[in-house]
Image (tube, rainbow, N blue to C red; front, side, top):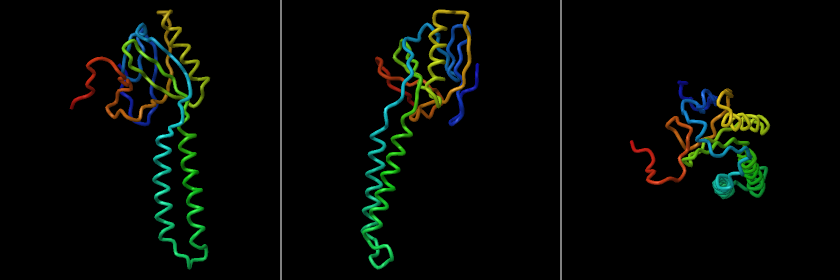
Length: 168
């Protein structure tokens, strides 16, 4: 059994003897119901929150701006607003990541990413090929795209009956 992934480290995805290994999580390949590669939509909520926070900072800085300095009170808000918009656009463009989603019969999903769509499409093709060909085995190194789970597993539970989550 492979070691569990550490945060920020690459993750191994492999098929071996009809078992799909995602890091240390193992799933029978026959339980894979859906495989897709696409680009995530921009995170407008996160960008909106950043913009509101930066707008608040711009307002506070402009309220305290000293009109006797060499730049004048009107120049500081304009420069800070442009910087705030640059940060918001950077968040939006950075959040458009190509992802590989492997959904299981239970409704659980594994979401992984690499820099290019072509690499992810090739890996998706290998996963699909392994479903119909029990002798096929492969291994690939990806990155985990999971910002909410701090317990080590890469499987996100969505829906289901009686799912109460993790109780510590």
